[in-house]
Length: 328
Ligand code: PMV
Image (cartoon, rainbow, N blue to C red):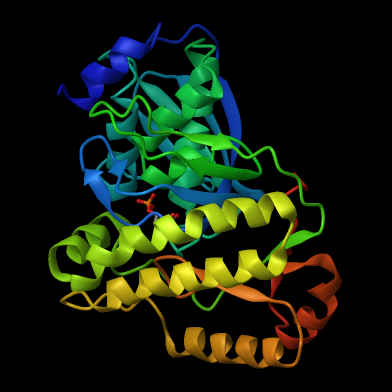
């Protein structure tokens, strides 16, 4: 197998700017069936499939222009070239550009960076969409998804709005590993973001996945969990069946966290507030409110419900940020 840059160069028509700038927005996404674990590190190929929904207007606006030197401005503040975030982004851009092509990147997140709300997914997807314009690739959505995957795996599900399924693929070069749209609409479906903490997560997802693979015995059963959950979730989205979707998505997220917790040193992404909110949610469900939860590699909770429950939930969780994935 070749290296990522050589592979990417075989599928791109151009790697220098043909336009004055490229501009794009990509939404963040929340997995309903989670991706946790790679079968290949360099190509960011997942062990299993996964399925997500995008977060409407929450995501990353990015503008990329040719420049005399590389620079990254994030939410209005220029980042040091040696900062982890600059190195990660320009390392990613190096996969696509000719050496000597300096770029000025202006990125604005409409959600908090590194709080388990997947801002890296929307950032890498926005970068690929902006480069598509700047370099004039005219690439289709499957190709753009494949390219975004090299930034962070879940970015491949952020190149389009709506429900996206990441097909794990089988080929060593990852040419069959990208996300496609379910083309399902669900006007009543809502995500509620319960921000328990904005602090950056202590262990990033890449490192967390490796630790889980290397030390958690539960990781061996994780693919079976996904094999059971993914078709149920896909079907529930198509049928707009909140109870099946919510039950399966919550179970899937808790099973992922169980594999993390069973790692050593343990990966406990939750804070006491996370657990308190989960208990409140379960009490509401006992009382008949159809609401479910999912959690990524961080302490924050995303509620899954339908529009008619919004009023009750906002009364219960005053800080809840309600997102309609179809509004963007
Ligand atoms: O794409 P990464 O490396 O940031 O990993 C994302 C992992 C989870 O958010 C926990 C799950 C998912 O499928 O998005």
